[in-house]
Image (cartoon, rainbow, N blue to C red):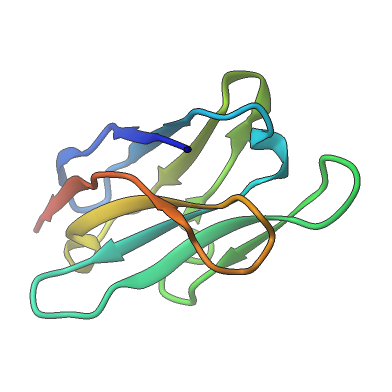
Length: 123
């Protein structure tokens, strides 16, 4: 069983920055594909960023949805079992509940989810 605990959400003005954190349990975090999703009111959940484990070493590919590319990054610290979402140049349309998710067995399905953290960007 893997637990994901998110933190770092809040209220920020447009143009500002926030960093979300997701601390994971489990002995093989370095092999997890980790992602951040978000869901705004009345909209479907979308994946905004992923750190995809791609092989036998600690190599990762990062993927971003078009609307956040160049503004968001998804660094990870395997020593701390933590993945982050660094969000810069925030826009009101980034307002949503953000969820951390883990694919722990390489099936391309996210089998563990965090509880979500609210991010609100004021104009």
